[in-house]
Length: 172
Image (tube, rainbow, N blue to C red; front, side, top):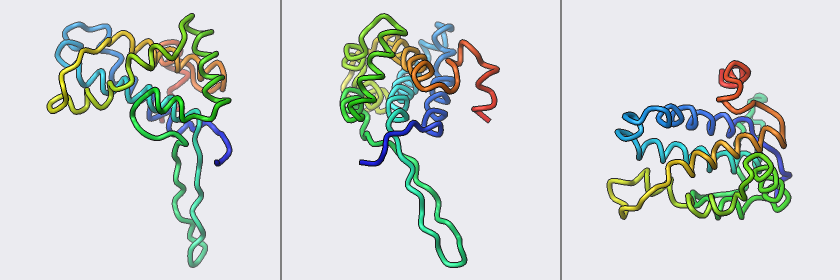
């Protein structure tokens, strides 16, 4: 297994999905009209936040004339099921994340992961999936807690709601 590292590239993608969905939580009309998009984006944010905590960079080989192939940035965890993604993380990483999440939120992470485990796929394919209910607050609580846990444990950008100006350079 490649060494454990955190990926700012994957983290930025997660924050992009967060920033797209978060405004709906303070606008009932927007939330009601776009609930599936909000749930899909917020749950994909959670997935990426988990994946960014255990990632790798595979550098491409040098080609003729010294041209370097593009690097591949990825996660050591695969899939969209949040419980399976969490369980696939390096054991030290998942233990640290669980402890940091509980310090930041006062709640254990696993029940929220269980509750939201299939939200991304179900919301993304809501036109053809079985109908299910969503706890839109739980998926946002999970995202908020993970952002704060990652910031506390690994540094980097603060939560977008806490310091939007501090994150401006990261998002550019």
